[in-house]
View (tube, rainbow, N blue to C red):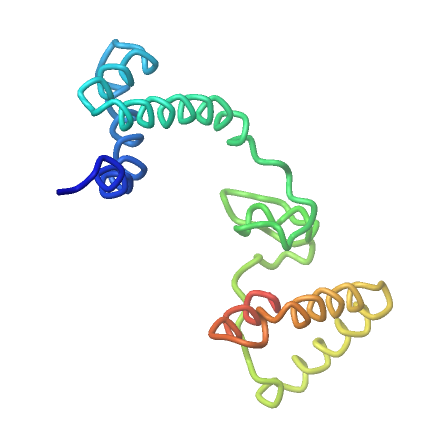
Amino acid sequence: MHSINQKIILIFPSIIFFLPSFIYSSNKTTNIPLEDRLIILCSDAPEQLRIFCEQLHKSDIIARKYLEVAALRLEPKSAQECFNFLCMCKYFRGKVEKGICILPNGSHLKKSVRKEFRMLSDEEREKFNKILRIMKENGEYDRFANQHKTVVVEGGAHSGPAFLLWHREFLK
């Protein structure tokens, strides 16, 4: 025979993952306020589970009030914080026209093609070396190297299955 605590432990994952989403989705189809619905949904449960259920729903209600504030994204401070080309465009002094970022030289901002250094053409190699010199002069190279060094010391970038993926993202 299971004790009430064992039953709570068995039921707990279901409550955590399914009930809050059920309440949220049912909020759209009923006129009963969310605060009142939690009493109805939890009322049939055994006392300890009912108390837990009500506490869970109350914390969910409070958390949802702050979701609206959290939904307002802060402006990225650099291109590295962007997730798409339109966000990155202004950091490259480009202009967005019809959903496409046009750079000051007239070319479009697009995905880069990854190449091994030996496979670069002479022109591409010169351009790469020129960019590295500029990065060294303006301090960006040092910032880049320090960021890499910090992650190496922590161990995530060089000691596990994420090695290639981390470096691919880091070098973008």
